[in-house]
Length: 191
Image (cartoon, rainbow, N blue to C red; front, side, top):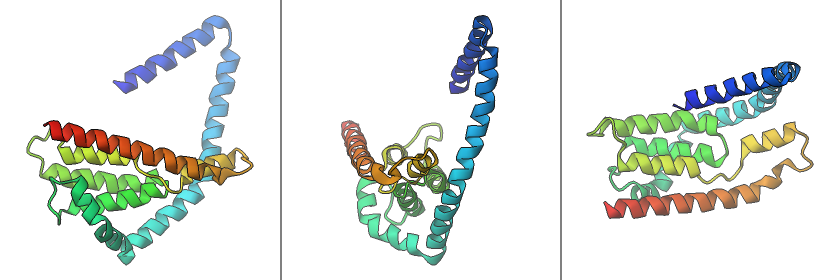
């Protein structure tokens, strides 16, 4: 559905450009957009590789397991339908750690594995469980301590102080996490 919407937007824009005689603008925008995408990739790639490597070292060294054990009491309260020794809890903790560092790309594999583990126990395969919904809310609104990707983008565009976003990002993600989890808790209680 979203693909069709974006496809329609693009098609309308191209048709509009032809009818208004701005074909040159369309060509310039397409070429500049591709170049900007490659520049963004080249600016962000070292940062993502560094933090993904650190996350891999943390996983291999057992540091993520220790973090998982540290946050398990909180996670068992957030996910009451999951047993305390459920393998998804480890992946959820790893996902939270990666998201806290602003590494959505590094967090994605952990999130997918967590969902895969929770789907195994799901009696209705075409419907998300309460734990899946809670994880999705936590993953989407998750607290970000260091917004690495945003800092990299601000650096790329020559911001005077790329890291000044940290405090506001932290406050925004804390508020969104509290609001999302509160709403989830209320909805679960109504069931």
